[in-house]
Image (cartoon, rainbow, N blue to C red):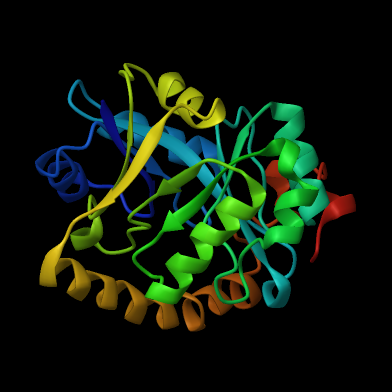
Length: 249
């Protein structure tokens, strides 16, 4: 077996130490508003023989008011935020990337059953346990996975250090490389979703949920509307105009 936390937002020495203490073999690092080369460099820096750090992007598609999140593993080139959902999936297909659905039907930022079916040829999994979810959200997520027939996964979705390793997805077999981890998701390898029990886990869930309000209001609005030069903005010079035709801004 190998254990993966498929979605963390933070990465430093404390994250690595905690992941190892929790018995993880890999974490998927997908921070907000960071370009792929930066994510890759940081993932490589913190990977070692005990813990693989897999670089990924949670792409914000659509406009700020109508955005849908997609977690993309195995990208070969950067993909910006705030492009159309069609544009994002066209790019995932072109790069042969592995797309996963985080927090399905949660709030107003997630893919639902209709979108999952529309882009199902490029989607390889649906998240069924997320600490930011309430119980009803996790129950609905399991229903979404069942309705669409896609494999499941669970992640800590850690924005806070204490949440790393609270949830994991356990696969059969071994994974020695980043490509092995991506392939396990891509090919629907047998897996089970686990989370830690007890009061501590519930307190960390509440802390993550409380962090959600800050994470999705002033912090992001300042980045998007006030700075205007975010590295994942579709019209950033780094993308050389490639996404201008699918840009939502």
